[in-house]
Image (cartoon, helix red, strand yellow):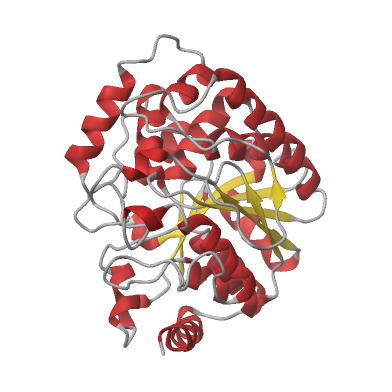
Length: 352
């Protein structure tokens, strides 16, 4: 417990932790895509522009196999810093938490068994609408169907995502829904000016205050799909939104379509909650009366610079890392020191 920080509704957070500790967890990994990520300088979620589209399916393959099939190496930044999926993989394996992959608009399908929604990928919001209103409606409906089914199988449904460029579309959705959001980035030098320019040009196209229309104009497929999952799953079991900025946008949209606050939390890393460029903690409290549970994975003490980079502002979160680490530590009793040793072993396996 000393590795966790509880923010907001403390009593609800403590009850949630007890449920995870004594019950079953299931990790639902949602992969998606927005062409907004192809704008130069907006994300580091891939070695170059052409490889970014392979990041979500490759993350899914790495969790499943320990290696990737759609690309030769695991997803990493141009200078070799690994996907946060490395943290997720160790968290899930060390605690025997099952997981499954859902394709909700990924440009490339993963080479493994997965649930296919048939949703299209999102367009570049700086120049055109991300989706149609009917595609948003379909995403919500499909999310509701799947969320209810998965929640009935577990005590806690943990939902994570992989969508390059997703912090920018999340920022646009949050601002359009009336929240004064400042968001995190996968890069230490958060390209705030560039994001703001993209968001401002996208917001000019909004001609309706209907939440479906807003997400269609400036969002991405992951947001309505996961919000749909949350709305139905939270009526059946506990739900942990595992992530940072993108999950704040999911929460904001879900607050418009309805969900059970008493069964919902956000689980993330301390790299998100301590990010001075963002206002994540304040933002979540303004959206809903739900707690945040934050975990420090202790990567600052790693002997490997690629892992220390997470604590220095690279990636910070993704692939449900924070939520999966929280679930794993509660299940196994491992602290961040033990977790770090396992992560370092995996890092050496991948990079040697």
